Length: 304
Image 1 (tube, one colour):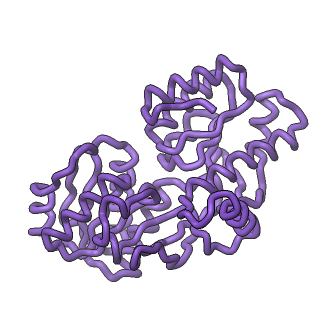
Image 2 (cartoon, rainbow, N blue to C red; image 1 turned 30 degrees about the vertical axis):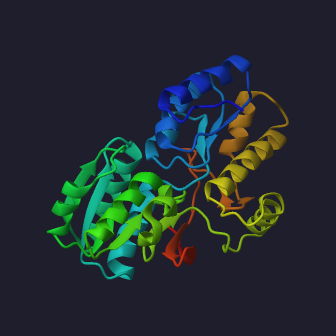
């Protein structure tokens, strides 16, 4: 294991270490801002990489040695935009983005585009620094527009703190988020998170045979602690690579890459995986989850 120190520079250095070690493949990273510099290094070295959870579309466009196990921001943005307008019946929305994370700005743009295409109106778009703890001015600007829904494509800490302050300021809107909410957001938002929705890659309730097996193994080892969707995505990434090595019948990087590219109908914990020409999985579904009474409830899955 190589530590990327949760920074883009650390991720680039870790990828360089992997090259120096002569590895046959790399699993990671989770954040798109970390995977981007890794992908550039590993593509140049012709070392296959599978990111479990980096949703930025450009990641796999780095080259033919880069793959992902998750859906793309373009897809989850479309799903959440339509879900807000069609399923929740929200005619207006505000979008608040973490300006320090390209993941957040990209996902926010996709949501806005598809919300408007669905028939809704974006009444306000605002930005904040990822290290912020006080969102008063931003929320004042948001509140006067009275949006029916508020899309916050940030991470657990910033999104949770923002939601908590928004509720205190009596902003009455349905709060929505993306897959990066699948962390300890309750630690920051508290009970203010109740009634909010977010898009996720997986939920323990999905009915995939390998998911049931994964959950049983996870519970045996870790007990009843909550399972982040990035755990089964990483699980799938490891087995996707192992299966590719088996089919390649070789430890040669180019053969492993070709076997990965040829992957069809791999049965994963997060669903079946077949890679398209860009190294992205086809037909992945988004799970819509809702926070209620301290739990995350599965609402439904939405496919392409």
